[in-house]
Image (cartoon, rainbow, N blue to C red; front, top):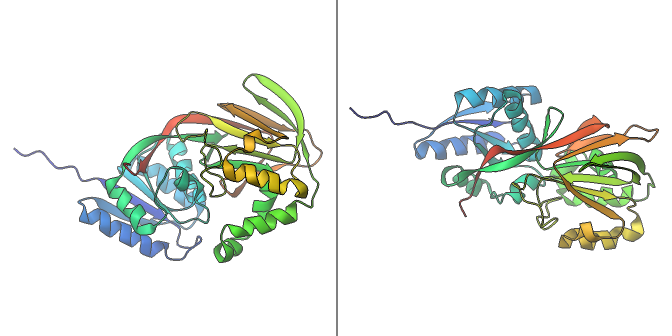
Length: 302
């Protein structure tokens, strides 16, 4: 008696309204490729964030793999579903965002056809996920001037100008001399300081620059924290050079921490908002933790 052949079932989720309008065609192409290789695929166009989170959560019991189309925000939504379910299934990524930090860090092809081929030829590998309360953080968390810059960039501007729009908005933000008084607790130590920028990452890629932090890897079980006390116009060239060469942590006026958990409290009079994976998030105080090896991302074999 022949054993039944298991056919892998994929759920492909996408937002047809987000960023590029060709997500539906990309999803159909991915479905066709998967089916040509003997796998099953179901398309799910989501109409809201909550819809996408619910689809990802229920997929953990009904499908073998989840495929998402989009940038860090779309990946974040899929991971929110995994957290809700308390478990994760292999996640395939077809990059479709403006910067695609997470995909770049994991060396997932940015070309659509190559990314779809990776769904067939790649292998799931264990990857860390950070959490802020019950919300996932797949790539980065910012507060201060970086968060202000991201907030000021409209979706239409990202589509029209690409990542360069962040540079223009950044120069504008440098003329605002705003800092925040923070209490930061990590690695058993507490410090109070004033900072204009705080950045937490889980990978080596920031702003599309995969050389940002050579010390960071997607499976090192660590959060990488950068605190810039002052980020002014005269320092933009210096910090820019350090940023591009992966040496920002060695720049004067920069505090660099590696930890598994960090608590950040606001001691300023004004409220301090954060952004997670490029999208608006909660206000301080926050506690960020790393969940080692929670994700299984389909990565190129090489």
